[in-house]
Each structure stands twice: as C-alpha cells, then as structure tokens.
Length: 139
Image (cartoon, rainbow, N blue to C red; front, side, top):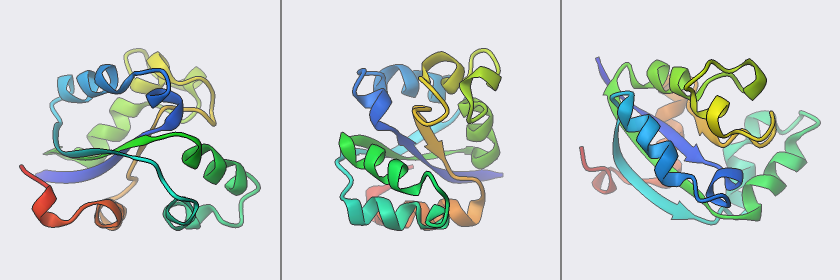
C-alpha cells in the first residue's frame, strides 16, 4: 500500500552538508521525496513537535539541538513508507544500526542521529500537517 511518512534531516547532518547523501539513500530504497524544504525550527515548533517527550530528561537538550541549526523537513511516499523509512534510518543508536542504514553511515551519536522518521501512519499524518499543506506535496 502506498503511504506517506515524515522525515527530518537533523542539524547534525545539515551542518555537515549531508542532505544530498541522505536523500540518495532514501531514494535508493524506493521512497520518493514528494515535499521538502529547509527550515530553522523555532523553540515553539520544536517543543510542539517533541511534546510527547516533554516529561523525559532529554527533552530540553532535544529542543535545543533541533533549534540550533536548520533542518530539512520532508514528506516521503512509497509502498509501506513508514516501515520502509524506519528500516532505512536504522536503530536510534548508530552502534546498533545495520550496515547501509542512514544512522550507521552518518549519525554521530544516539542524540545526534541525523534523521527523524514517523513511527506510525497516524503520527506521520500529524507530523506532515505541522510543516506542509496538501498543495505543497507533489506526488
């Protein structure tokens, strides 16, 4: 089934000019980038996006990290896009990520793990709507 998922190329990756390299891995996996833009998240945007983690000890650090430098927000489309992109990203801890995954290739640490991807279709819809309107997504 064709699905859409949401992706963020995080500041640790944009700072190192890895957007194109990461997009190449995404596209090689059979996912299409149907919307993309570079943004500098405000503190309010980052807090809203990561509000699920608000009670966690790393929340403040996460918000600070995500607002420090620009990110690239994207909508990806393809067969089983949510599961496929999570597979392509690799484990949160790059030491545990499979060879060839984005995090194995590019992540610096658990915290600076280069990419975010939606964990469910429901969250993908919510996350996409925070950054894109339907007319900005061209399939």
